[in-house]
Length: 117
Image 1 (cartoon, rainbow, N blue to C red):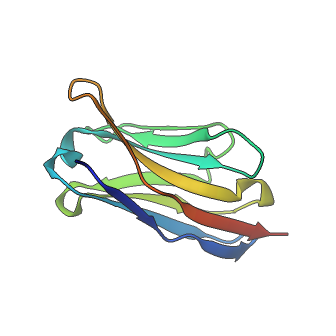
Image 2 (cartoon, helix red, strand yellow):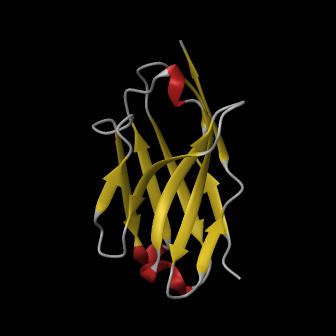
């Protein structure tokens, strides 16, 4: 069973930066598409960014140019560097590992990001 553990959340002032990390268990990491999602209070979970096994990346329009997703296959870890944070970026950030061929769709428990204005 794949386990994902996020870390790096916290309180930051608007305009500041945070780097989130997500460590995965298991050897499937190198094959999986890794993604970050977020959920603000009272809102639906939304997709933020994804990175494929070949390191192709995609971003939601709301974070494009400010957030960077990366992965280190040797460490089974995916990162989300968040710069120029805005209050609307606040929420619980979740890591996801997906692989259609393997039937994989695993989630972490999330890490809380708070952005003060």
